[in-house]
Image 1 (tube, rainbow, N blue to C red):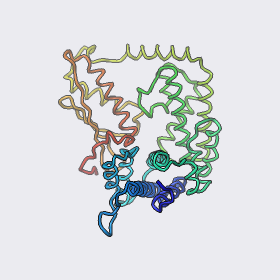
Image 2: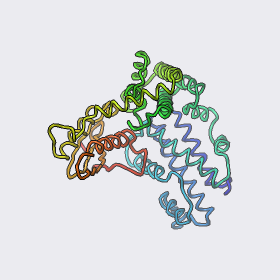
Image 3: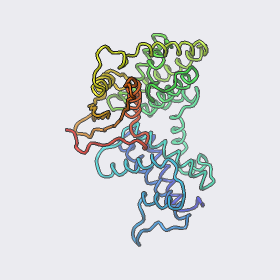
Image 4: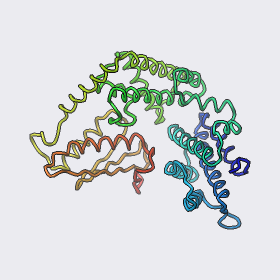
Length: 389
């Protein structure tokens, strides 16, 4: 495939413009990120269709849609990477074109990461080009540097977030928190914690403390302040400052030093003991003195979980359990708005003594679905047809 193609060139130009807006700070910037990314993906798919020998016109005046591109490429046995997430990007673009408003910072980050991985894969596989070298021809150097700074992979790059905080504090804060999560998960994998408490829970100090790893009091408080600020900023309830970014980066650096000072074997033993204690203390259906009907027990257990779990703080839910099916409605933060509904089923064995383990499984799925909303197109929540007011 030729990179000189006008469609390919236009696609890359739009991608470059989206990176410029990604480094911006306004609502309009975030909206243009989505629009430019979607259009750039569409043009690249159309260029792939031309190279397959097919026409991109469905009539003399109109080209095929992006969905038509995907269907035609599928008929040609041409794989499109990250297709489920690209379909979400298309839906987001269509929604923005037909209503007022703009996506939040987390949404823009998610779709930018998806688009970059898509382009990196396609450019290498179908055009035999190095994406990083190619994009440098279509985006300003300063914009690419700023984009790179938002994805720290080591201590020196983490320190660069303090500089980014001068011009883009929200993006720098979210990047620092992403680095924090990665740091905790890497440590957790070494000592046997894993991710069973939910994909976003590791940004809390409780991720370590519930597993027997005690943090110094000052460090614990600083990490919790970072977590609260991240949650407020991500949902538009606070605007982080450069000072907030510096404090967040410093707390992450302090955590890295603390975890690096621990003996891994001793930490692994503490984690194992903490897990045993949690299992022994966990209330179960079969050990209760008063047995409720399974649906009622599941309703009470999940209701208490939704009300008390700190990872779900600030969210509101409705729950219904009937005939071994659980329906959890994640209510909108502002009214009017549409609720997202998640469905879960549980199955009991002959004795019914596996209901506690079924409840734990559903809790983990609720955390994953509610905290990583729309991260995975394979399990998209249903939207209530009636708008809540």
